[in-house]
Image (cartoon, rainbow, N blue to C red; front, side):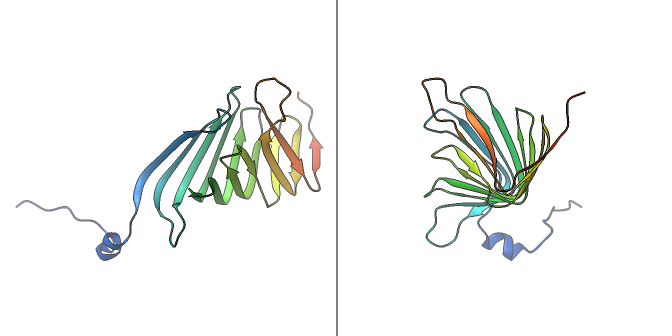
Length: 165
């Protein structure tokens, strides 16, 4: 006798929800930074908003000068109208310059190639351990040189310097 495979879970709920798995979105900002968003699962935003709500989200940015920023979070969203992505639920952000940053929420302004937190952060990097009330990763103001990005810690910054061995 041939057995027929079946899905575990609530079949009515699966049929009712609009959800996709293994979502991947890639694009390039106006200044040439490549952005990739990957989600394990995603569904459309509700109401009049255009975009997605995602679970198990990873995002990466590679700047024209070769700097890389990788981030991951349990939850996130991408709003097509405002061109913003928000990673939530405990975010880890790693930079190619050697920083690993932990925070609750990170917002990425795709149009302006800017990443910022509203929450406090903790970070480990080349200088040691850093805690701050906010972090901003933004394009440096140009002086005719290639576009680069600066990582700025703000609001009550505390650095515990750990010299390299």
